[in-house]
Length: 327
Image (cartoon, rainbow, N blue to C red; front, side):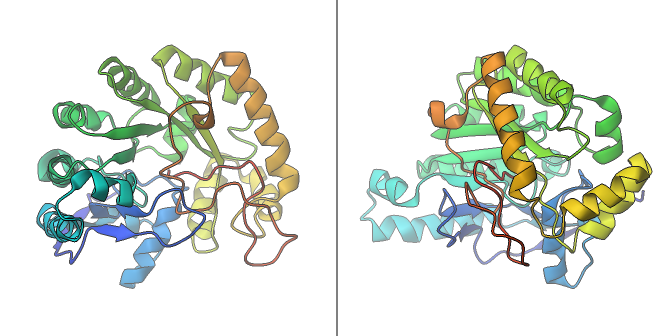
């Protein structure tokens, strides 16, 4: 695959308001558009259609870098601080935790040299804004010096498998799962609240007891302080691209997926038994769900939490108990 191209864009604002009442956060930050990790199942591929691009490998080949992100964020927070009479504690309470990495990985490879995410963290730290961060990359450890001084509510490492064959087939450009788990261990050792987003669960691939146990055992050994689970969200724009990858992995799964994904989310008849099984496996491994501790659900994939699945229709929502997280 050709190397990605990078386009610098000027952002008017970087901290974007999330208006959906189903979301557990009110603001999000995505320092980039597109992601070189190129996970085949990533729901955020559809965001490239806003630029007239396709929801295909354009998402990983054409990366938009918000080069002025820190400056735009500082301007935005300064205006908010003035409205709160420069009472930063009051401002932070009104904002709530800002979710970083809801539609791109803030620590994808280009961040190593561009340092846009790092610059944004420095601004957020000055204004004492609480954050949650979701990533697949151990590059986050570079910023431990800043994170230790911030109000970090949770750091969420996405790990949906520890099976090397599945990882190589589905997300070959992302950091290896064992490196993400090592990052969890390093983050918790540094005193940060870090855990695992077991997401997305791929039906008939990573939903078996064997696959779940393997991830949960690795999470426990890494010292993960929480685990959150989410089943694959597969919108119509993403299906053609993902189905190519799925066919290469096991074409016999295609008819099963087409039946399961008549909407963006699988039906309750699939999700609810799976979530019960996951809850039982978590207890077996001595792992906690964020509701059991202080972790929040911030980074829930754009996106709905604990909603019932209507009986079909284009607007069908995830089943009760499913937590949809960024991937």
